[in-house]
Image (cartoon, rainbow, N blue to C red):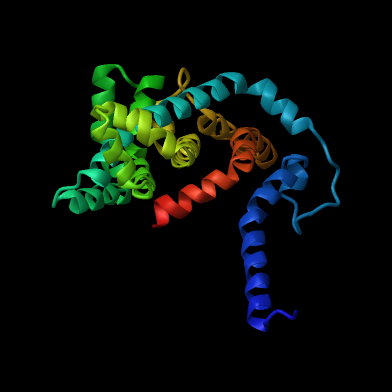
Length: 273
């Protein structure tokens, strides 16, 4: 059966878009195996260059990669877990006990994501300084929990709306309390949505750079700060920066590849719907 020309054209367009999106990552990967001279050569060398692992050795020896990796894992897991703990009861209330202000409240929560972070930097920085939260994992976890909470609530709200309300009503008739209804009945039914929501906000927390660069320095600096440490007053060392970038994104790329089906489901039923 022959495919329509329009289908073939859209397929080619989709591949072009996918290649355009993947090209920066591929170019960063190739640059990480070049020398500094080849990294800035013009015309650029795509495959015909002297492959080397020296940049990875230099990055691992000059920077504190294990500490940055530990901080990224602690901050991402901690902020995602706290955001999910707050988002589940909030999304339950909006999905199954809505008021006439629920829609406005949800839109207001989402609108906070459109606020430029730099607009709130100075008051938050001063508050963190006075309360001793600068350069602490707890301080970054609180910031990212609050920042990612609207997305978590929206995604869980859409997932909870897929759960038949008759199941929850049957639980109430059997004497289930409110927390039993949420934890014992609703949570298992919405487990795929919870997993996709957790992974999405985990990825957002992992990639966060604005707040981590402004409220951390050494003790709680995650991998985003680790990458920026290879930008020095002497210049940008593109090959080392590329190697540091690949080491920083590798864990979350692997996790994303393994969880891509759940993530697509979460984006489809949570963020878009």
